[in-house]
Length: 439
Ligand SMILES: *Cc1c(COP(=O)(O)O)cnc(C)c1O
Image 1 (tube, rainbow, N blue to C red):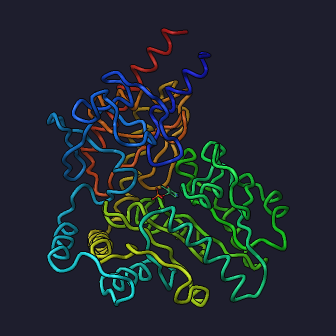
Image 2 (image 1 turned 90 degrees about the vertical axis):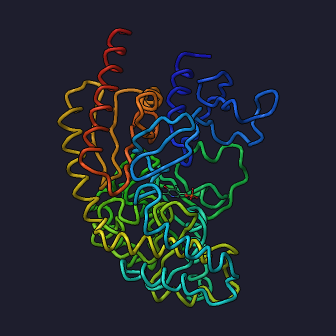
């Protein structure tokens, strides 16, 4: 294997499991990434799970607030939050109470019936955003899939046109279903899955000319993230977003914002697009929406209601009473505790501390991000830092090979931020010394 391949492997080894950077190390020895813990696996040490993730040899068994514990009793400071999921910290009390109460009453009922918890969850979502109506599903990819379907159906059934094409951007990430991986602007998630569905065009981000050229008589919508998270934590330029929103109106295209990672307070407002002064026609949420229970939502403006009539789209589990109770409790808690504002405040503090303690390190190139979705762009692969972090009881992920991604919960304390930054600074300093010695 060429040296560069080895480095790529190492870089990939630190990447997020849920995102585009599925770790592809296939280590089998104890302690190597991808090793199966001794308590798992068959006689040959092989897991009964398909190896879609190369898992760290760590088994986390308990969580509380910003902390998780492994099965050996070690405690870790969690700066990844299940990848932007446990935004109120682990096992938030109010959500736990509501979910437990719901478990005592009713676990599941078909969407053929009224589900008051789901109604309430939808009402709350429309109160904190520009959306008027919500469809519940179970994940981010499903929410984006629903958004794509709604956009097509709106044009074809409400507007009576043939429009179907969705324009997306390079380095974007929209999910792993066939439609959403086609929408994703990264080649590696598409390999081996041909033929891909038609109806998607990808253009470079911030390239207005390319975008205008891509718009044709079949174009139905433009879909983008306000911060490309999996793609390296790149906030989209404000001017570009506004121009794009205006262009969509002019051309009769629907603007879809993927807020699966950026939504639910993560970036310092309920939804990141609220900081850009635009109103999308459709946007999606999932990761942080139910404090760790599976839930996703597609949110739309009033005029899109008539595109989805009974029988046009469905989900067995979507908005199920338990998940919906978790959504309600999560939003109510976030409102009571002013979580988006808190995330914005803590973002300033975290960035300030990072700049103070990391910026002088030659390995650190840029610190960027919105709210508590922070990227630290480095001069080389950072996969090793992730494993070193775990050894030092700090959990974080990457976003592409060279970017450290920090996703603390939105209630994280200053002391916890201080501790994480100190650990990270020490890890990076040690790493830089090692790099220098290798020169
Ligand atoms: C994680 C993510 C998705 C996919 O969500 P799943 O719940 O894993 O299907 C889609 N879009 C963005 C921006 C994400 O971060």
